[in-house]
Amino acid sequence: QVQLQQWGAGLLKPSETLSLTCAVYGGSFSGYYWSWIRQPPGKGLEWIGEIYHSGSIDYTPSLKSRLTISLDTSNNHFNLTLRSVTAADTAVYYCARRPFAFGVDVWGQGTTVTVSS
Amino acid sequence: EIVLTQSPGTLSLSPGERATLSCRASQSVAGSHLAWYQQRSGQPPRLLIYDASSRATGIPARFTGSGSGTDFTLTISRLEPEDFALYYCQQYSRSPSNFGQGTKLQIK
Image 1 (cartoon, rainbow over the protein chains, first blue to last red):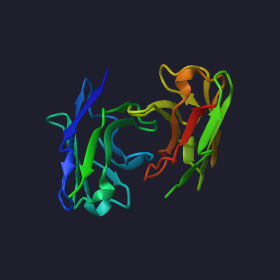
Image 2 (image 1 turned 135 degrees about the vertical axis):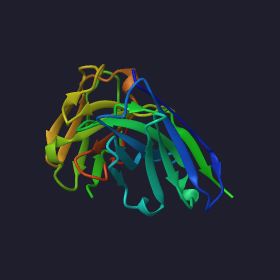
Image 3 (image 1 turned 180 degrees about the vertical axis):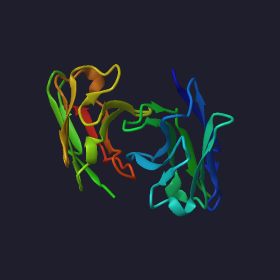
Image 4 (image 1 turned 45 degrees about the vertical axis):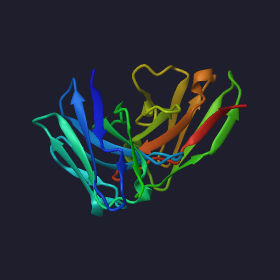
């Protein structure tokens, strides 16, 4: 059974860089999209972006200029980098797996990221 | 970009009643590539339905998804106490794979 375990810094100052890592246990990258989704406090889910096992990437347009998603296949990790954060980036960030032509079927536990001066 | 609008924003019902949740897309969702998720407080979402009408593994039969094109529905036939939660739809036919804003199902 595939499990995702994520980690990264939880408290950032404005203009700093958010970096999160998600480890994939019990499965391979092949055949799946590896996604990042966030949820601001008290609000709904926001799709951030995803990377296919082949390396093709899609980002949400509103974050594209600040965002990088990458795969580290040698360590079975995938990563999220969001530059120049502001208070609006405060949210719970989830990593997730989405099979091709399927909904998101496996979620990480979530990482709370707070941006505050 | 496909925008998903869920209605109602909040639905107040009693256990045993039937719940009907709506998700309307601003453009046709190709292949009916639409999913429904349930989120309980403090937890990640859980996949209920994919491809508009297919139940995910382990999801009870009281959850039914339907629809195509721009109009989709999640029906919960007889509400159990654990069904009172937040529900989101998501389309994955075209990037960005947006979510709807959610429907809160609360106990009346």
